[in-house]
Image 1 (spheres, rainbow, N blue to C red):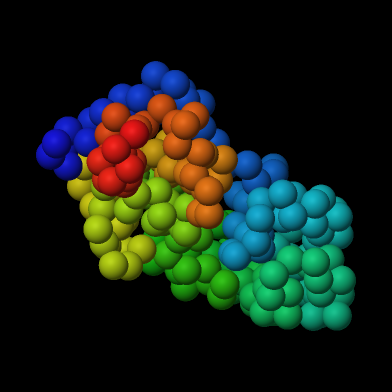
Image 2: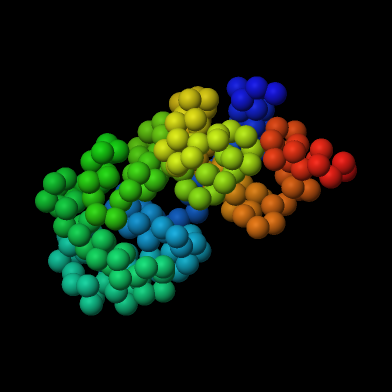
Length: 216
């Protein structure tokens, strides 16, 4: 099976079986999503969704967050991973958002990456979810699933991103990001992938390898 054929089969399956795929982070506007995605680094969406409602209420705008102190923000984020860094990043992000972008979340990837706490993955999430840009954010789930399925052998998230964007049509990239994340979160899990209930086994490289190895 060629990589092109593998991509085609997997994308077709997702289109037919998972027509709606969206972020599980709760937000009401681009600013709130930016806050949530920064907090979600190495943290579950479930935990972030528990933390953000009171945070959004206390700091409803970038202006409110930019004028806050570390001691004011920290109690709201102390239960997420790396709370010290994230509290600091949130304040600095809001300050730069006001200083450089008038308080509006930019759509440009490089502009987004200029914000404290925003790496390429976070920038791509914002660009795809908010602005429907044809980019794919590669987190640990996407990286793992892409390798297992045989969609990429990239050594870095950027390598994987380039492979995915090479073969996935532009109009499906935003959805594909969520397809792969959700598949990795609930089916192709890190420790015990649920292969018996997976609809992608016909195209999965790792499943084919394990199938031949076990002779099942």
